[in-house]
Length: 145
Image (cartoon, rainbow, N blue to C red; front, top):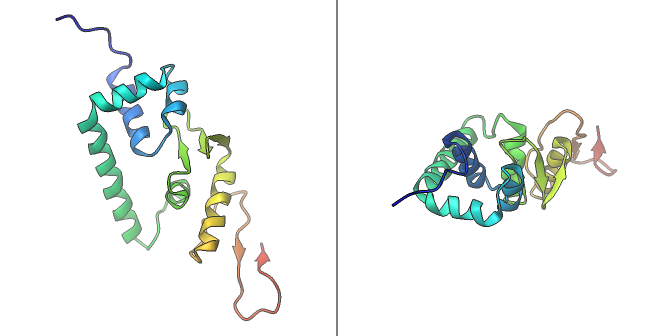
């Protein structure tokens, strides 16, 4: 039985699978790797074990990071976790996407901070992003610094 030529090198395939495991949308990956969405999904299914290995590694890293100091050291990863599947970063091009649209990293962190504010959790510090701090007992609204 003759097999066709591989669509991607092993390194690119692993990058694609890792990006899928991180929550990157197949349509974005298809565009980034010059594939169709069907080819991306077929690759995910053909390498299902490797995909789930990557997912498990990411979950373990996330658990270790959250145990250490109560938060992750990487603000972008923290933002992706806070946005819970609404955002992704392509590992090949490093472009950030929020709800399927290309955004800058500060916009990504700002969106995550909006969610974290609603959940009354610690905000993410990132260059170019104004953090909002609520001062308990103050007479006025939250201060923006």
